[in-house]
Length: 252
Image (cartoon, rainbow, N blue to C red; front, side, top):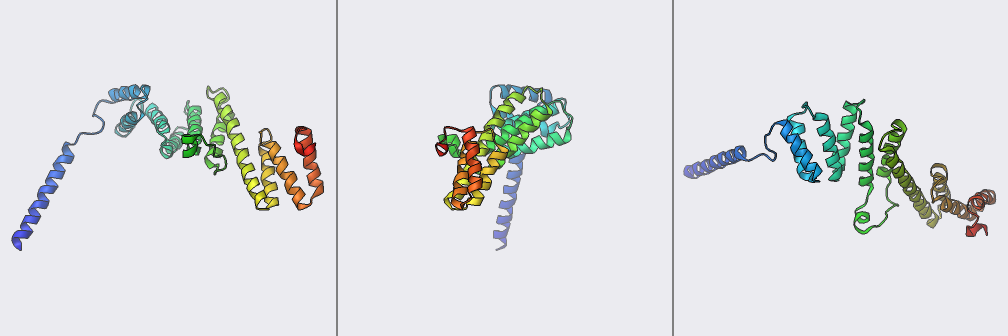
């Protein structure tokens, strides 16, 4: 029995020593180069769109030389890399950390722009990306946050080179949010929850009056008021519909 125990103990020691040796001799994922060389490597990888490899080099730079000459640019490049790799949580966490630590940085407009883009990407559904399906009726949380990011950019940095694109993206998001409210209103109509449907339609009229969903919102309100037997509100909605959409079937 003692011989067996000695054999087991000896085997475990050999295994541990072997494991220790292999861990010490294992090559690091990123070579131990001077920071300037690593930074140059990262830039080449970014230019060639090798984002996975660029991420490894940039993370090594950020961890090994957190106060290096290019530390702020490394952090911004890392944020961009996370965005390109669809690593939403890491991108957003690093953006928020950078803004918190550098509240007066000259490139904050860029960071809010990337934050908006990241939230827009997070809003995309797998099926929309793969099959081109527009899933406007899903939870709009990320879309709302993206809208806020772009709005902050164009409000605080009107002359930013990213402002024009941010504005166009806000228009897109606004239309999407309006269609979301219409989808919910229609769902309520099907279940005869007419007051809830009216309230959803009002959100479109109040928050997104310049979108294509306004006409549908008025149609839903007219239908719901009719079902509830509320003639005066129905007539008011019909008047607004006729004024803005004279070709609509409900006013002819």
